[in-house]
Image 1: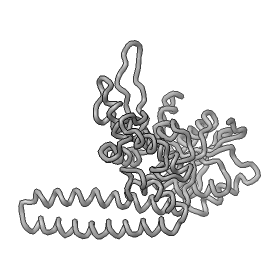
Image 2: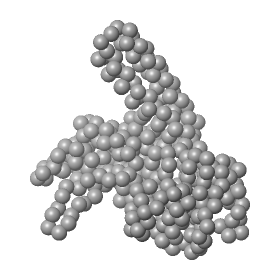
Image 3: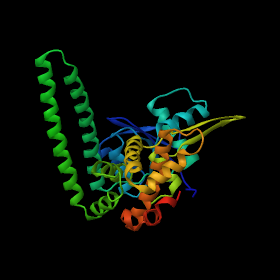
Image 4: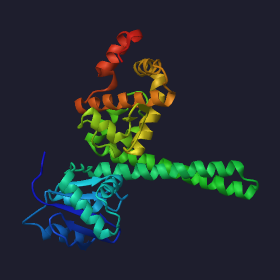
Length: 328
């Protein structure tokens, strides 16, 4: 749907927001603080933009995005690679914070991206805890490997001490995630439904709840693209190369891939789906697992949308009524 009016581009840095009006040439700045966000919205209280575009910048954009959404502005957070490609298409070689803000404003006016949904406070908290947990798990693996290869006893003991500390921290985060979810009945119910599917445990369900809030609200194609489980074709002239995964939310992609590996082993529906896929010429295990991850995502969206457990879905019922002829 076309949105009439001007667009606002914001280049986000830690201290400053560089802002540009799609219909005006001169950018301006406000602090990247709550007072700066209020100053920005107050400036256009009588003439709000049709939409706002900013790039995803880790955690730096989150505050202003939440503020703009809270006052009813159409705020879009986009992949930086999209604006980089747009800049090349426009022949723009210069790169400064001011020119980036102007580019984002022009991009918004031309492409009119959809608003990026805002997670609930509980979802934001869960996602932050999940990401912190992932950081500590990565550190634990690194310290465990260093302990195993240490040549000297005191180095090994130091590594093992850190591993013990990290393990305790991870367990505390697991407890905190459980408590935050338990305090939100809607999220708790959604988590319980997700975990009824084989392959979806506490960690993967937490990832989906926090990092994929669109689950159950978008169509299958849009959701697969967001989750990074939609292989894209690569064809030019008579040359057709293997499809590759591009874009998407990498933490969700990794979580679904791990879930698919488990589901293939433990659920007849996904095992038959995988076997049928792999029966085609030239297919490899990873490709089959991604296909299963894609199918799992589609079914999880239905479960969330309709409030179903896995055993209540038509997929489960048809596969277990006639396992040999499980649907593809």
